Length: 120
Image 1 (cartoon, rainbow, N blue to C red):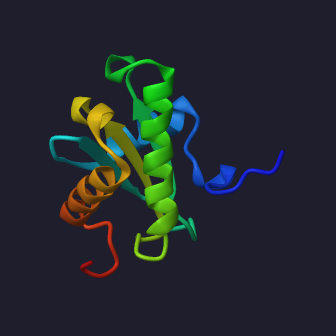
Image 2 (tube, one colour):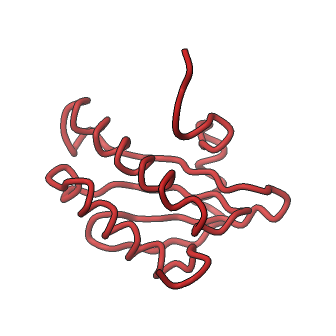
């Protein structure tokens, strides 16, 4: 099966990798998202890990949120600083949001944490 979008190497999957980002990275939050960012100077690309709790809704809702976040990173990949790992934790309001709102909110929090190459 061909997967379009985010390739496997751009994702953080392993628990140890998540823990590293939580323990050694910096974090920034707004009402909808918490973003952890960890420097990986030896890595020529960025990776993202997603955490969407069951509190946010059933699988359909959680998968939609994850799709939106991955879509955002795909669209914005040229503006996002490479050589970093990002862990995005979705908070309650995201279950009610459409893609435009998710995009606006993620832009806001990534700008605050300094993950964007230039001010967009």
